[in-house]
Amino acid sequence: MVLPLVFLLCFTFGCQKGEEVAEELSDQKKEEIARAVEERVADYADAIKKIDMERMLNFWADTEGFVFAGDGLLTAGYDKYANQLREMMSNTAEVSSIEFGNFHVYVLSNDAASLSMEYEWSMIDKDGNTINAKGSWMYVFKKFDDVWKVVHSAGAHLYE
Image (cartoon, rainbow, N blue to C red; front, side, top):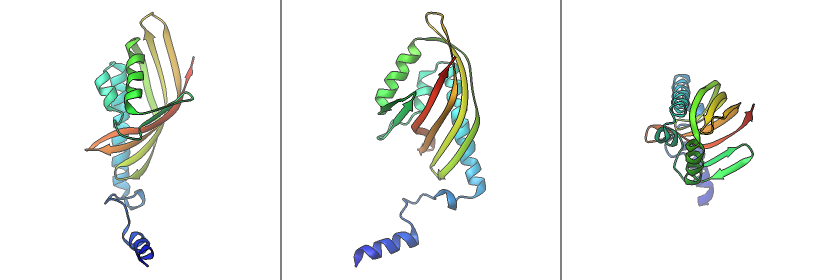
């Protein structure tokens, strides 16, 4: 008897933690969220260009359930991924160019959104070798204390 009542109450009043789902958000709010995550990605590109590890690491959510899936490998856990990123960037002498574009944002709720994009970058390692890559990537963002951070990420690099 209690279980049907719980289902009825959840259906009638919603069982979200006070968060609005995307269908309930105005078009203006969806556009605001889309701009915010696009700006967050643009800031990440700038951090990569400047090899600013603090800003780069701040892009990712240090939270339970964090996953980075790139180039056929899945890294679960923020600390493990952060160490991989630090190691990779420690061998980078210069980021010659980086461009992100063709953004497609899907707003999931007031505090969650996904962004798919294309990218192209060129880096020079400490041995003087130039590495060029392009591809597509997808980020799933969650808003933590008014800051959009990536909780899941997946994509592939096509090296030239």
